Length: 302
Image 1: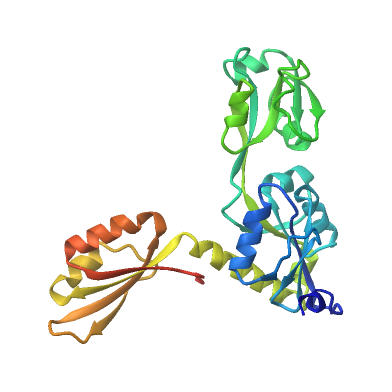
Image 2: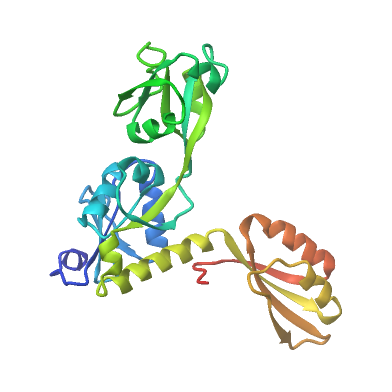
């Protein structure tokens, strides 16, 4: 059944979305699409496609670095990739949604034994930089009056300064442990990056594809937003209601309904940030709330 769905005849409203086929964005992208209900089945058998619950949505996989150009050229309509890769490609695409995962920084790093800070590096006059991001690196160094030689590498850059092949590197840093292992220190943050949903500009304006694209954007945003929220339900004696409500953070306002109980009682329902749950519970309980339930939220649609 899934095979037939994935290979059904294409229609004019068919929308293709491509996800990273490997790397740090691969699994989080699969997880988000699955949580959103967009991926129905993924065999993980190198088929480079997944089955969608939407008959007009096709899900394929490609190299994260290739995705911006594929979206720009209209090979696919939507793509999930890193913001750094979009900027590096100079692709003319629309960023539709930041996805709040795959956070990383593109940094300029150099041997700690040779350079104290960025100014120290700039005094060289002629700087050799090893990087997988030559375009971003070129733009970054434009504001400095130095001669820059950019060495494009495909893969690990951290060993280049220690081998004497470059003075510094511009590379993606997630935790910084790899830089530390190679004796490198961060001299400057070039840009902040995260996973983003991007779209082909013509597809976004296409009246047949627009409803599907808008739905995908909406449901991914709702799923992503829900990951940071919890639903709190509690019973509050009427005499404590004002105090409890006063200590509750909420989106638009708590939902309050009367509870049939021996003493005047109200049920209060609210949504709070996941990292504030225990603080909110403690404060609410101190103010008189009881019977507190904490529930997961699947989607938050504003």
